Length: 449
Image 1 (cartoon, rainbow, N blue to C red):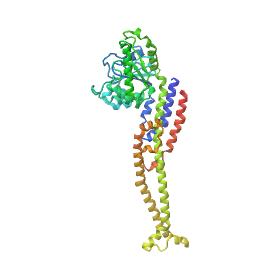
Image 2 (image 1 turned 90 degrees about the horizontal axis):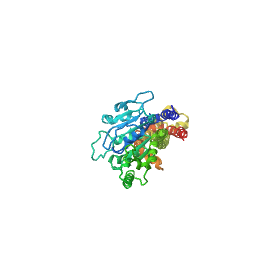
Image 3 (image 1 turned 180 degrees about the vertical axis):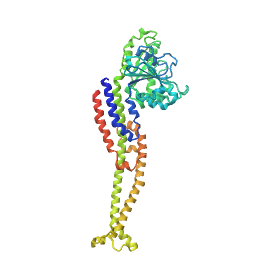
Image 4 (image 1 turned 120 degrees about the horizontal axis):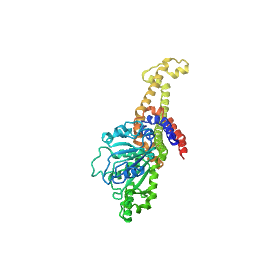
């Protein structure tokens, strides 16, 4: 086991031990945290069916592993990796993959039999894949004209992107980003599930352009389409590549050899990003957890403040009734003959003198407690559920992004909140999360810096 793997295992053990109980306490599924820490580095390849994904895989591994062609050759999600040390290569079908707790794919069972029949793992003897897996995906389609796949393609892509340390999005010069599923992936799916630093854009098959002007037109079209899909004016870097073994005129592409080599090196270096991306995932989850705890702590503090005010009113009312209720009662009924105050002044206090005052204190306490639990607390809950963002400061873009991720769960927790949340509170959880973020997490970042 190398140093990186030992660090990954240590992160997994400590993070699960400290965050899992807190995730469970806020009714959050800790499976996504556990899943992110499993297995090896993943590179996800996306693109339409003619974008060169399979060709790139074959070139990276130096063998014809995947079928290639300008028409659809494979409609499956194929995970390509090496077998465990000492094991023989084998193929594993989707139904086995989603039921293997050692793998990070158990959550994919929800996509059903149709998906599992298009999901498989292929093992090959390759030194490049000792610490890495490459996922070749079905070519993206124009969902306006193509039949339904039988499962939610965009959700599958989103879940795979969460696992991936690198997402390679490939285009060919003839369909430079015009496919509907490409648009949905870039515009919605990837931003919600991975960071920009994990995405590489590639225009392949550039040797098929008839001349430099044709290449410039294709590149310009892709840049324009990317600006529309990302909603940004600044265009990310686009790697230009081709397959030298298949190129019609490889000598004319020599100028792109360094870029091809850089692209391959970047993909094969994905395992070096593994620990950093694990920490990013834990960091994000910890801060989301902190924001939930922060909101509930603010809610608890408001509830406590309201309870203190109500308690002070209850104490004042009880004190008044303790000394004067029997006087009021005697005015209407003629009893008791001796009030508490007169017995105190005469020094002849007995239990009959305490009966009505005690009933008054108990009644005041009960009624005001009932008012708090049935009127004031529900009113506070309703206000908090309606506008939970008012409980905290959203004074930065980062906190606003966190809020979009957690506000639905916050509302559910506030709806389910009870008096226990006011009495016990969430301050202890908040301190635990802060200690993890400022202590353990920062120490791990220092180890990889």
